Figure (cartoon, rainbow, N blue to C red):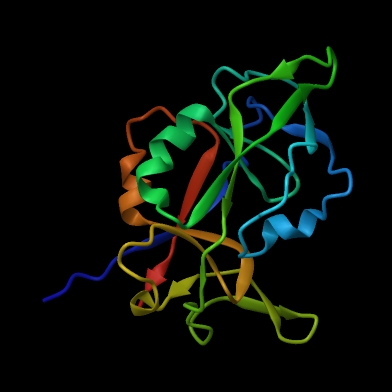
Length: 189
């Protein structure tokens, strides 16, 4: 008998106000919304700059930001790497201390670009806006059979700002002293 896989919404830990966070950003001519789409970024985005408060950068593994982006430390990327396969990009970026203008090294943007139509709309808490666009606002119920077994991080087609990770990935971070991320358990059918 097959065991059902479990999944979690990957999110930033909003209870942590002691970690690095983005105060401002400059995307130049790059269209920010491309980072929310389930599509690989093929253009050079090295000119994107993020300005931060530099608060506790040495203990920050996930940088708080108002853009719903996953800006992770090298440590976090290394822990996630065995699970990424060809499902997400790791993009180097420039963090700058807003006060001193010094560069802060050791952070990257994680861009999951695989997406699956896997939300059980009937049993999930969703909100409709702009026609047929939905946002997950309550329980997230995943149709587990719609997600290939070798995929551990992905976006859901129904709400592209929602990033899901497998339980295997989430459990691999337990005891690794990572700061700044949280997981919200999904139900599976």
